[in-house]
Length: 348
Image 1 (tube, rainbow, N blue to C red):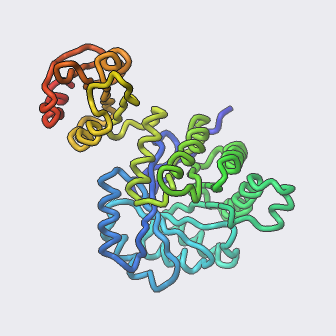
Image 2 (image 1 turned 90 degrees about the vertical axis):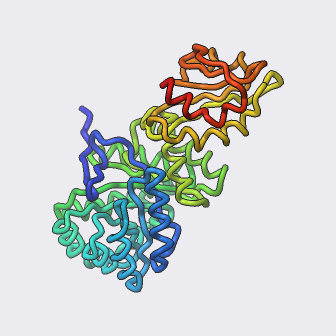
């Protein structure tokens, strides 16, 4: 019998259970720069980010953390390493979620941390990565790094469970796709009751990091593993959020935003497809979530090959055509592209 994953709540955000797969990111800005953090949060909010993690490295960041918590329009998760006192301070400051690394979080003080988390109705993410693995876990795993990642989470999880705390998210990440998948398969098998956060750590810059993340996370999501995700990129945090939603749209797991499909072009093309995509992207961003818009180079590739699109345009000998679900609706001049959003809204 399948085990229903429990739902945890961070402020008003639900994760797990019947909730959609959530898209999160992490501030690239140090907490001390409050104004830059605010601007980054506002940008993330505009892109649809649902949870943002912030590095909380030492107590000098406590006052800035309090300020960020007061001004943030997105739930905040504090990222804690090495120091239980930092985790407790983050909770007392108002954080409703913290992430702890099982590889460097000392056991002393965990009882007090759990007591505060329970009192504050906070969520704890246990997140292992390659730096979480110790020699004992590697020995137990007989050198299997994916199993060692799993064991790092398991050890920390058992401590929390033995203290009666279960508002937990679990996570195992590696820069290796294979290790990440194998570790998460173990998590899903042995702890199916807990929500899972997924990601490929240190995936890289664009476009390599995006390709690597999509390759790994799609394999997990297709197996029903992943309640919240981060596309970790050496790029602005807003790009991580855009990529997260694009991945979920591609897998038909979320409908947020507008999906643009376009042909690769060939010698038949009557439109400069890449240029047109860039031109219409800002014009159509306010169309209903889940709308699929096609941009096709010619009337051959237009209505028929893209007939599953809700609405689309294609190059034609005398300009462009607008089609809807494979049916040609209008013929327009190329200059009408500037008003394409109005035509689309009229026809949707």
